[in-house]
Image 1 (tube, rainbow, N blue to C red):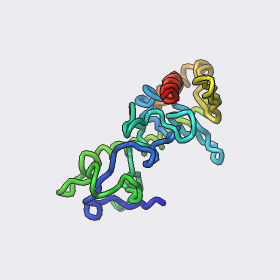
Image 2: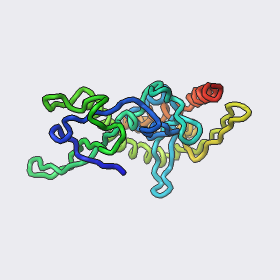
Image 3: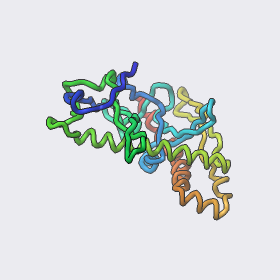
Image 4: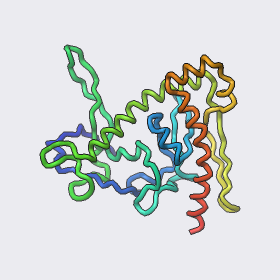
Length: 241
């Protein structure tokens, strides 16, 4: 059970966060959510795929980290090999909202919450959340930047995937992967951006996507599929140990 609390330097002045990566912290996931605000970093290391919510019909991007359940091929001996996706790098922190009156207008302002029941949270080891004077630690400042990217990426992503769907740019993709004779995987229920349909767009539509920043993301999604080869090699290395 999660135990979310609004973070503050009085109540949580002694909190620390264990920042190593491990299965007991939930880091052994084969896929995690990713956001357009980090696509440029993600596509250097991992495949970016889209998944469709069966209830809402909306799309969300995920980054593929493994080929079977509870497998993260980039997690080794407490270390993450490569760029750490924002949803993982945020640790036990998340964005919440608090109503605040500004110029006689009530606004919902984003604030940082922490899951106090997260196994990484303690008072004895890891990165301090606050300095002795109550100021944010450098670690918490990094987390705040990551959370901002997630928050902005969520809103940006909704608009982008809706635009892709409207232009019929999203198509199913099935990955048939053969690691060796005994390890073969068929990954379905994923989608990607169609290179063929993207090439068929007229100049005006391409310019509109480019102005919105969506065109670059479309190419990053498509080009990231080349990283499936890196996943296969990482899996071969693991099964050969």
